Image (cartoon, rainbow, N blue to C red; front, top):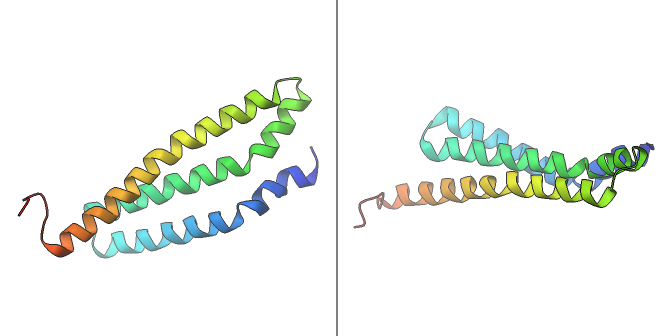
Length: 114
């Protein structure tokens, strides 16, 4: 395993890691201030997106590990892709719900339909 495979994937997704880390910090500050349901979903969603970004950064390491053990590299990358998709989808749903709920609270149209 060479140094590029360890840090190369991390260098490519570094901006995404920074964005989700900032989102996690800001949403945790928001949760400490208001503590409502949208803030909790914002923390959960940004945590899931940060986790999926970290997993996608490790694709090169997993591919090298599979290559050294004689496994199929394509299958290993496919499993990593599916796992990031399965983590990213609930993260997007949580983020969407948090933003939708927060904007509906501001307008006074929460679950009444009026």
